[in-house]
Length: 258
Ligand SMILES: [Mg+2]
Image 1 (tube, rainbow, N blue to C red):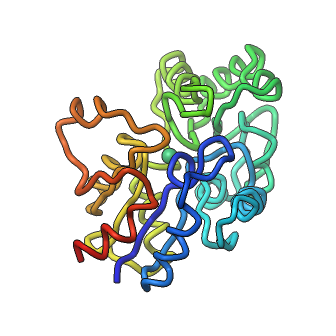
Image 2 (image 1 turned 90 degrees about the vertical axis):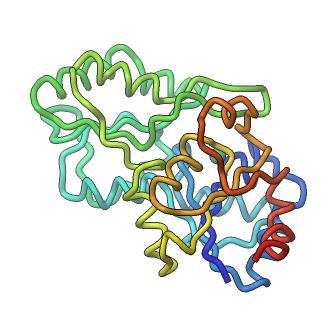
């Protein structure tokens, strides 16, 4: 039986609507004996809130099966003074670090959405504060560096644009805490006691999920839902091990091929 890391946004649901057949597919993967963990770059809510949301969509998922970027940030930045340009929803996951407004050891940039709240988080005032902290020696971290994400209304600008802007202005390079960082995949595999060579990453994001997991030595399945774009596969010059229409086809595909 395999160890399977499942991306959440674009694989299980898009904008809060479950992908047809996805809750049953997760049930079936477990019934077939696979070890499953859910790995998300989502930055809009805490792990507990995301768990509630997914259960509301019909997924049988426990909070402690979910790996969020906020949880990784809490481990990596433990004890540090952090200027957090993140959405208020994830502050619950940032236990053990000191969120401050000035004299930071680290600047942490979170994700994005189109809410007014985020408009305030990424205001000129806050971005300039972050820039000054970086100039004064703070280190730059980001939950992810995604260029865009997929919503029911189409693609939307994501936080990677703000991360790249700060990198450029402060002449520095951000440490990425979420996918596709190797540490993120390693933490997820550790949690289900799996070796990368025997594990599968299932995602809709060619850069974050497929390329990241391949670099970490994992096998990969790309789904044709969420962020999937056929040209991304053609342009990349690398291939996932498989492409399936959606997670609903995954249990049968695994059964046929293994
Ligand atoms: Mg995704």
